[in-house]
Image 1: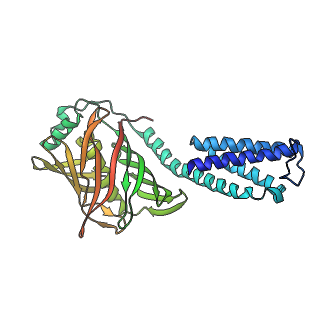
Image 2: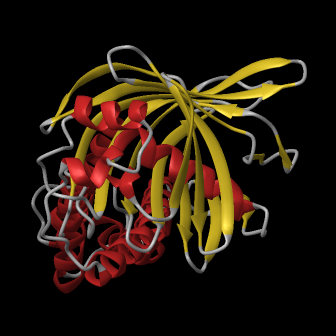
Image 3: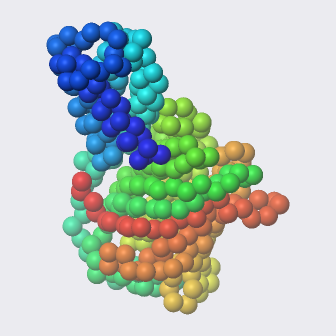
Length: 360
């Protein structure tokens, strides 16, 4: 589809050269019954050049291409109106390009709200220049201490934020899987999670932005970045997103488990109960480890299923531990709802990269 649109833009641009050739009498150009003046001919060649530049910008995914695309559609359509009898069918192509440009600009605007929030959060971060040591682990259950040692957090800088890139699949009950890619930033001093997802649902581009910070929590999913299909900012979202935030902290930022906002209860040699308090919003989870020291599952009863807005047991079994920028971390996980009628896996996540203490 992308290549087809690029070729259509280029072909559309080249056709504008006929108007230039007609104006300057480069051949008979019988396609035009109406005469075209030389000044107008210059506009025809300008439209041709801008169409090709727009195609290149679209192919290279440049942020400027949608606005240039809208400009070229306006110019092209004005020229078509002047020679309507000869060039009216070019309107069809202009409508296609205009639609693509509007969607492209909407994508930039929607994702821009995410990137602006990230920039603001990064600027507000107070860097920590300390090293995690064994003394920091003393208050943790033994299985959690072993986990931090296993992943390699001890002896490394304490972390205050992280950036994660995921690829995976998601679905709703009764619907097919769809693939997605996502980028997110998590902040630990003042808990925040900014998650932006790009996907195709039923073949249509669909983007989603989850925002969680001290001010609240919300989820906005837009078809073509234009039409909101989900837009939730209810109070029930906050404990739900608090569970999600804490889940990712446990799995992908274990060095942050030393925080005072987390209280612990040892259950046995391979499990512990964690209680996370984010400024009065309290959630609990049980963490399960294996003999090697890996965190293999996380279960909480405090997360709401959005369609029902009702809490169900929620788990995230994790596996495939690998070295990720100097830490041994799980690179595959699933998100599972435990409904009364059985388990439902709604998400499969593959870690592509994780960075800590990001400054820009």
